[in-house]
Image 1: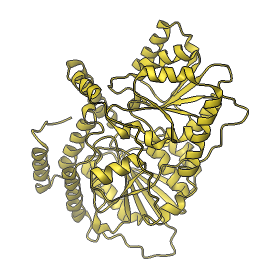
Image 2 (image 1 turned 120 degrees about the vertical axis):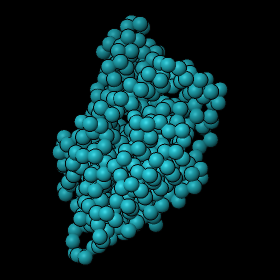
Image 3 (image 1 turned 180 degrees about the vertical axis):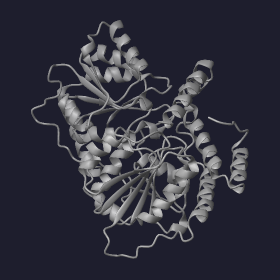
Image 4 (image 1 turned 45 degrees about the vertical axis):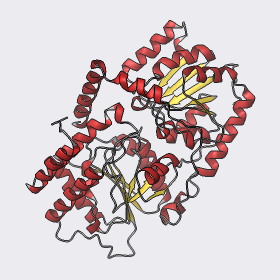
Length: 481
């Protein structure tokens, strides 16, 4: 991951020196590698959200570089009769990413051409996803940065923004993508927006004052506005309505509970005081039913789950694993799911909304120190939440078809009122004027400082350090492909 620095100030001085010497490539890489170290450190999760210092450095790099490659960087719209084009800057387009589905909704809500510009700093984009899913929508083009160093990718991106003449530009960068964050400059005159989807870690771009800052859920909106002092706007997460729970699918139709969780390994295989892979076998032992997991898990996680099944003498077919589905919503209906157990320790906003829209009751984890990672404020009033496994297991044993039906109806109402997407086109057409105000935060969350302190102490050992080193090596390897 590169050189270690004594402080952010020393890193800043090194980056500034690289810029002064005309080496934007090294400057961008230094910032990228530093952020990658922070986001792979669990102790920093949901404690560090942005950096004014790093964002200022990215802006300076982009400004200096733009002056070198463009005599007149102002994006002008000379032909008013030309069909509008919307640009989306991403680090990587992937079928399992929540931001990819947000981009889908933005595309559907805005008439015109759509160009996705990918820096490819985190590996190559999933072209199959574009062809099979996004390709069904008209006027969509994916442009991938040519293989090269950071400076070459920045040059490509800035030139394309000038050439495309976008009506609106949306920045959907991964946390560490210094190229994407440096690209958009005030002198371009773009109507540009930073979409804050990497909101549980340090993310570049949070403090860019020349971009309008979008937060997609109440927790992030209130955190950025009240804690970070950012003038932001709220564009609620939306998902296309794929229908209510069919009336011919009763709850607990076989007399047992069918549960489901949808998340990749980056949300459930995170060091934490409660382990998802350990709870799944206990959950199945308690309910006597089935558990469906949707999303890629590592072989090690699957081994541990199946080892737990053997320990409790649970038939292996009661745990159903599917790495990916086109629609979590439709899968919840197809599998006749009774209860959606939200991922932990990192919750997922879009999958939670899909579950509510599908009319499925939810069980949310109250994170020991993070309201954002809990997701409680996205759910319907009275949604069940738990902190310790015993609470979840006791709740599952208490459920009846009647109270499941009631909770499912509450979730559906929450979806229809806030997340159906019926008003998304109106919001995007005139931001911030048409942006709604997010609802207030609930009083259901509190920090458990005892558990947090114990968990932090538990992270300070050789085993955890080796794991983080291996994971960072994997990220470097993946980014080259």
